[in-house]
Length: 383
Ligand code: CMC
Image (cartoon, rainbow, N blue to C red; front, side, top):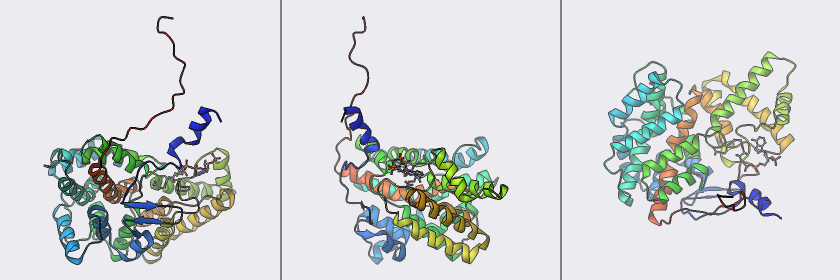
């Protein structure tokens, strides 16, 4: 095998273990956060409990959880300048992608964080909690600006998930909406060395600060091969629905065959690790469908279409949906604007990112791998 073929086999670092972590374990059959399996957490824990587990390193006692929840509730309002800039961007740059606006908000927040340049474990935990608590208000300020409305103040009486929905819509969410959002935040919270977390760890490994590492991670999550897939999956379903409605001869199967012929990737399908299915996808689909059944019957059509697409994809390609596929349908049923799906992913994954950044700083060596050179042979400049 030539050296070029060898390099092609490992593109994207596929199949390579490049470090160790105590935060999370991912394999073909399980996703485990610090010793707890994801289905167990989704069924029995709250997002606040999972956040404590990831950030503080163990399951919280009743007292620890009460203290943690109170801390988060007190930290929900970002610095006023952050809200002012984000809200203003909705008017001055209405086409700016919400992920870029959120990245700006997090970067701005760093300038007002008294611990910004302190990479000690204690300071990093404080910064992590401030970001976790305040990101929902940043997302909400931008969305409400896009709708020509004033931001609402974060609500300290609500759970984290309910406050996120409140900041987005200015309406008190119902019980089932809050539960579905809470479960989705748990499912999205952590996933070992995925692209955005790895980006964050690389930045942290240079002794850079937590906010810089998180800004880099937001940039990595935005792409549609990673977190951006939840928006892209819903856009794809809407395209299929529109195209097959407008042309009654076009079946869903024919739409997909055309996409395969054009070598297009179907968004929300496939995974680097889970070749036999993503355990998170079924959990979120069931909660999303339950929401539609109880609160928005007209949205059930998206789950019917999703099931059909899923079945054809399996029959023709043997490829399963990942968590981003049901996420699109679920958030759409809940009336959440599509461009905010990936920012909501940030509102959750901030916990995993910060846990990894702290772990990197606690036992740091700069991440600096090698590349195999495949360019021109050595020449003399004067020849
Ligand atoms: N649609 C069509 N074909 C696909 C898809 C897809 N979604 N995913 C994989 N394949 C094909 C791929 O083209 C390749 O075919 P061939 O051997 O003919 O070249 C084969 O399946 C194997 O692909 P792979 O090596 O398993 O893919 P990968 O590990 O390099 O990439 C992936 C993984 C998730 C980027 C890819 O499956 C993809 O682009 N999916 C669509 C985007 C997506 O849903 N991303 C979300 C990822 S999971 C959660 C998250 O991070 O947010």
